[in-house]
Length: 297
View 1 (cartoon, rainbow, N blue to C red):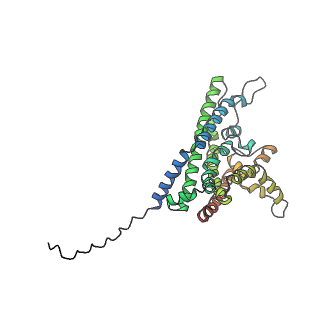
View 2: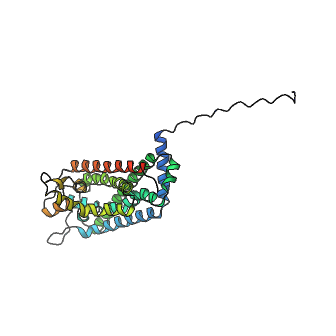
View 3: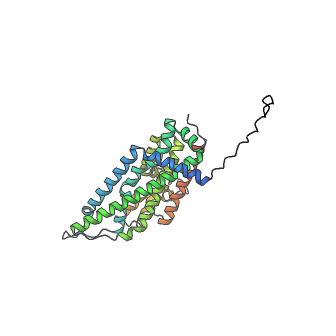
């Protein structure tokens, strides 16, 4: 080899195109990211612990809530009362207690917390897509709430049935509450989607908490009363979203005016469930557009 010969220029290295990441793969990575984030939060463990404690307490107290005969013997609880008890009494409280415990951690928290503390940009850079990040939050949040609600139902049922057996009280017809319980789980799965959507729209966790607490209990009823005074809006209260959610969870149409007034809607359970799900999807979609287009500033 001649040492004085000119060096041969290196061959150009062409960049190898990276294989495109499929939507399913990207969504799976985003979901794992959200799961790890939720697992690291102290609030997740606190809320799940509170829900388990409430479920055990409700199971123990079922024996004291049973109606009694004139001779003092306990009577079997009706299907409607059983369903309301399993759902953490949405008729009396207007909102299931389990929803209030879970939605602010698994629903509004992942979106509002990122926007408030400026960590959303890190999430976007890590996952590469705002839309996928938001979708993963909805899927993980809904799955977590559904799983926690189902675990609560099982725990509450086991403790309640054991308490009744130990005291010799009659067991209720557990299987007859299957329909209302399944609709309750579907409604529960909607709550984190509402929380995330409102958090993206309002960009405030406090405002989201107030909206999901005060609107179903008070503001929606006042809105229905005011709109009912307008021509052509006589039945508007029947189709308001959270009244429809309560109607979806009930075991049977209310027979007394007071309970019917608490529920707020006489829609059939199937129609009420569909209405609340459509409302939830609309709020979730609006939140998707807001989250995808909003900066962290």
